[in-house]
Image 1: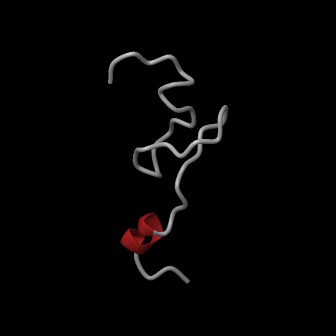
Image 2: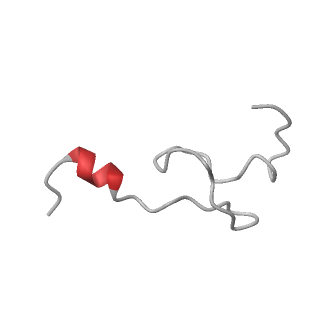
Length: 44
């Protein structure tokens, strides 16, 4: 059983891009599942 919400978020696995499989450098609980390279973002 999870003891706290903080523990829950600390234990989330790293996110991977749905297209290329590389790890996404952002919070694991965000909604995006495509890396900036695959989504053609030029400037963040």
